[in-house]
Length: 297
Image (cartoon, rainbow, N blue to C red; front, top):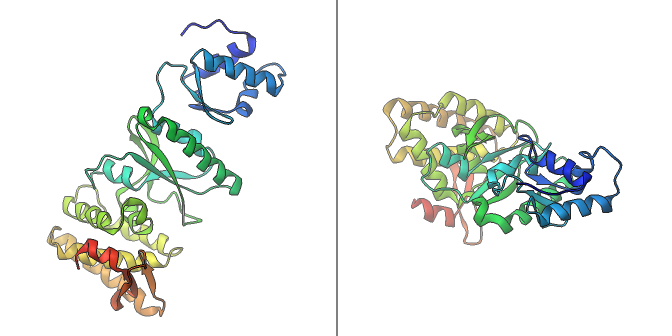
């Protein structure tokens, strides 16, 4: 792309075409790239010129999409720019598809993250909303999901190639646990059951030892996870899709979880309550009738 540009525009454009250039750009970011002192008005003028030349596309107030390569970035390409210094990982539907737990090709990429503060949370949501304007050409939308854990958010996460981009993605074990935490985000409990069934039947990468260790960490912060995992694992075993060896290991885990339930008088809830719930004493768990209808129990 050959452009006739002024000094400021040339400096910015040179930065944009760099292999390490950001996919999303703000006026505040741009000021750091300039070698001479330039007013905000001057920066905005430079960005506006680059937009007219086709190197940038304005998504909304203060946010530009880098198109200097002549190709619109994909949604997975902009994830690091959206979340910046906030701890995050790609999980739920996209991770489940990546690991073969579901055949559904993700259109919404859920990013579970811990915002540094409320201002960052609002910025992330605003940017994701602006990116939706380009969903058809970027291959989907980015959905921010605030983590329900204040610690150990990176546990069970690995750097993985997703759609050609290297991103932190939840492993199989973490994806299954997240399915019981963010159940509504994945389409309710019926989908979660399918993921568990796929993981136990394939036996390819699912690691029961890793799963138990991770569950212990998560349960320390989200008490209801144990009850939910016990409930859904019990129903997964009823489908008899796992090997005898896996059934024994899962049975041992269920006994361990039930032992924790006995030690506590606390009961938990899972799912929307508008249609009522059914109580399962073994797991101290009130499960919504909507979820039970999906599970057909």
